[in-house]
Image (tube, rainbow, N blue to C red; front, side):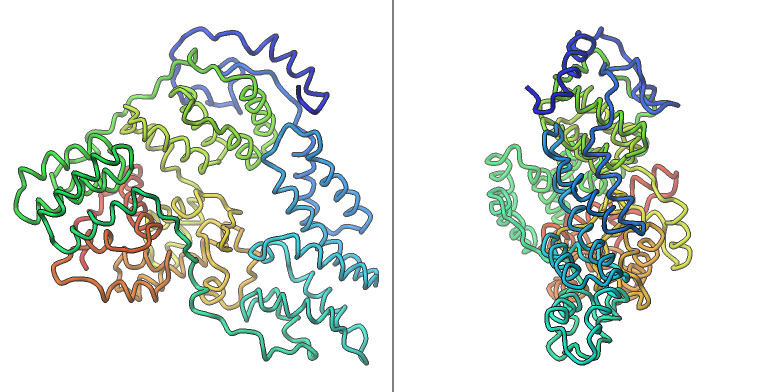
Length: 558
């Protein structure tokens, strides 16, 4: 039974109205969401639910953090946020609500300083910062908090406040040296700056702690044979790998390297069926695009233009999934799209869902601008080799257009191809403006704070979750990388992801007979290698969507 008594009525209603087996009928996927928030009469059939109280608390907390508020009002909302998860049917919000509580503690500290309540203020600041991951401080600690802390540290002109200064130093060390958010703290005359570290070049890029799976370890032999030109060993090891790991996604890469080696050794007849197999099995992938260029096949001609129809009668979610969808629809009708994403993300049985239900959820996520959820669902359909992958409607779902005006404006300003910028944003954040990675990268273009401040000196780091600011700084940084590498797109992309100092090292390892394809395959970081290949793939399909000439991957030169 649900912990919240209010849901007993919901269960009764769902049992009465939502469980009956739908009649089989084919409907265009797009029509299920056309010209209305969500179709009332289309599958899956659910009843309307009120927005859960925890989402209302979450929304109120987000709003209050952007406003001035009294200590009493903040504490009242803190109690609400703390109590919201109790008895809740929603688990996806717990961590977000916890972050909101500690962010409210920082805000409460600012209000307490204004009331000259010094000891409670310092305690509130400590609780707020200790409760948040350090990489989230930039998101929640603003100029007002720094000014309040500086006021506390200087309230007694005759005596140093060591506790206050220790907290100030802790913040200064966490932020870039010239961050505007902490300038007032760095200027404190009593603050000892001698032990504050200088910016480290490693902090310009993300950190890597990749976990190596068994298939990745086994694939290393295939890759080494390819990169070192050991053709016969490559053919043997690649075939053994495909036999031993028939479900690994790396099996396609093994086939691709076999085909490339055949081609290099002038065995076009052996290469052709391997290239063709990749086009047939993974038609939207980087390997497929390169294969089509090798075979001089136009992938665009193969894209099906007719609409995707789904059997709505086959969409039959269980009780938990119906409740989740009902909540998601209530949130969507109130334009709480990020909260819709949290609900859809909680539908974890993706591998067990039938194809019509996956398509329905994918379309729902897309219309709610929750593209990361949509991409996750699409990946399951790709793994199943869904027969409509190469269709215009599916490509539109997998390669959405967002923030067109902002991207065009910044791309024009810095002389960049807007399609390349769009392709990068898709890969970095899935167009989620307030995305924060575990390494501290912020916003649409996932900028590290030290990278952003190095690119634009007079920058408020907190604005990096705003689309205009993030895209402006991100395109400026990408432009500097393209200039550094004389317009070489793969080098610039690799540097954007892993840092220019790493690309410098990788370039030194390039062999005389390598192509750009070989360089991409040689990138030692899995994340960076897949990142570069994925953005080149994205660019190809965005050029298709915009009816622009395709820039051939195989024409890229070292």
